[in-house]
Image 1 (spheres, rainbow, N blue to C red):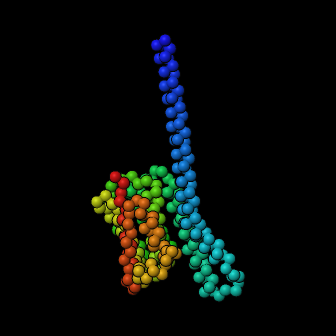
Image 2: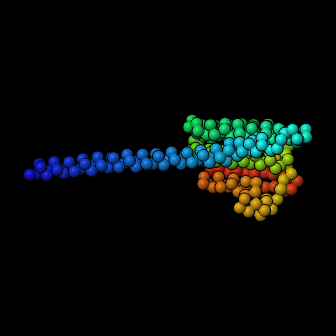
Length: 243
């Protein structure tokens, strides 16, 4: 009788263990699918915000009236804007491809990508670019979300310089202190009054400055903007590094 009870107990335990294993596998599969769905949603947003915006501008510029009715100056302006939008689209595509590379997960590679991205944008816009990066970078792994948001935040700052600053030079500086990276973007353009822009922008976010803080906030990061009319603009992005 005791042997029979023991066998029944053993069978019950085995059944419970098998059920638990199946549940864990099911939960793991659901989590994998949820993570995949989140990644797809992020990729769709990045495509829309970056590549999609540039392609929309190209489409709009291509369909603006009959080119034969335009003056040489107007045609030249349209061609230059089309060229700039094409560069933006290619640049966005390169960044998206880089972000999908799981091996590009170090702080050193992130800073190298930011540097290359800013230099490309500046060159396409005819801006001088000065880079001041540390010669030694700690071996820190950076997750995909943090990489993406850091890269896109810096790109947004530089795009604002190109679109609004009327600058001749942009300076990109990175420092690593107290387990956090600080990236500064400074231009010698016309500058602006940040409080005036914020008040005027309202929910439309004006120059896209509000989105910078939104990108960094989930990672504990901050964004500071210093500018005065006629004195250029300095944007400081701070991002804590993973422990």
